[in-house]
Image 1 (cartoon, protein in one colour):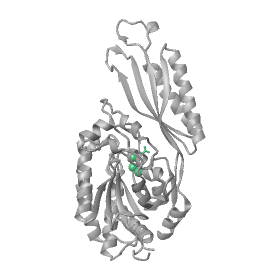
Image 2 (tube, protein in one colour):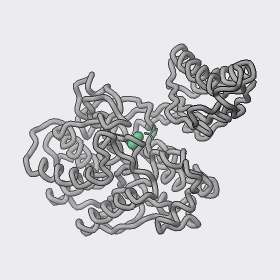
Image 3 (spheres, protein in one colour):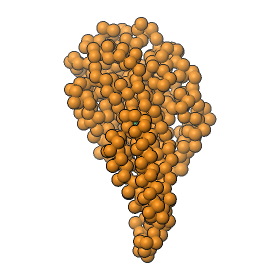
Image 4 (spheres, helix red, strand yellow):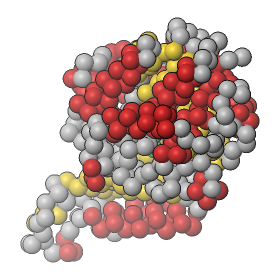
Length: 415
Ligand code: HGY
Ligand code: MN
Ligand code: MN
Ligand code: MN
């Protein structure tokens, strides 16, 4: 406390700006897809490069590096031990992802520790940076795999069986990447070490822009889940099959997307179909099957459930009208997260009062919050856009985030 000049505003010293830019450019170059954004999927070659970068950052600082049984990467300032103050985020991305979602939290964590060391801060508790494995679930379909396995929310046998678009299981992908899927499972030791977890993340929205604030804290995460909507039709020839004879899964799929949008609007919820598979996906063949993933979110669980019920009924009715069979199955569910006021208010106090805002985006901090004290810091995103190359944060706000995180870590680690 008091070791940081005004942690949220204040000028930007060039040295810190230079250090941020160097670290940022090195990480941003890994798997850089340019205008097409990032495609940093779990246990791929790009992921291994990111994991190597993380380890190099830890070892360059004389920090103890560890990879836990669930593939989460840890860097320890001080001896790994109980009651640790943990910060960090994830390095994987959605397809076409931006540079900040995840990486900003990891880079800021290392730089916040650099700042504290420069100021001669000697923590009385262990401090750790964590890179949670497979947060986006972009390859295997379930988000926050590393933190869900760590906490036991996801059963190891279910995780091992998850398959990617090529049918490769998580277990096979881990083995190919030199990791051992047999070790997956709730990690009492790793979980027992976490005294508090603070995740810094780029804001995925415009609340801080509208409030003209560089930093905010999370008040809650909306309940949300993923449902697989499958439409079973009958393959046939596009040029010789009369309309009345078709069992085409595409029209019911299309009707369901439109119905979902209308239900979401009316219920005050969010419904997204961002991933679709069409089999056999031929221009002159009537599809035999369409798989479409619904991402549904709302401020409360009852609204999400109402939305999914309406979408299911719309899918079944539309399918019946086309001699197609629809089935909707839940693939993942994340209950509402209310970030407890204890740690959250303590952070806001250290930062001299910052806005508290809810988010519809899922985070590892949300998974952990059911098991350990957890909180989130948000950094202003002038574009308001995320999960897109347009995602952005200004250098000045990023440095304010580093200073804010440093102030919070100092407050938590120094009794
Ligand atoms: O989907 C989410 O909300 C997060 O970005 N994984
Ligand atoms: Mn994300
Ligand atoms: Mn994220
Ligand atoms: Mn997150």
